[in-house]
Amino acid sequence: MRLLTLSLSMLALTACTSGRQVEVRTGPETAPETAIHLTNNLSQAVNVYVVSGGNDIFVKQVAANSVEHIPVAGVPAGATVNLRAVTVDGTRTYTKDNVTMSSMYEWRLP
Picture (cartoon, helix red, strand yellow):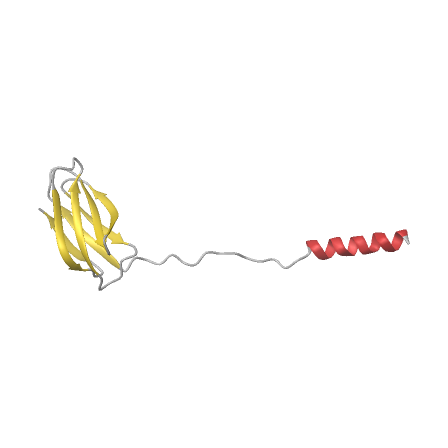
């Protein structure tokens, strides 16, 4: 009887530990469909926002006198948004309203 109990215990233990192996992965990263090509001609950096559906989406801080290509995640091509750039000291705000987003929207400051 003891041998039967030991055999059943070993069988149960083997069944519990020899389950199928499962590989778990995340889906592939999707590249943003839209982007802003920003030329900042100002003497200070700006924080760039996309305003979509009343929500401000911070996309990037762009250095003074520089050019950046900024991918915009979560905003599909063809969406109409407002763009806003605020100088890092908060003294000046630049806006571009009713922009139809595309694979690359060109924007120059000022």
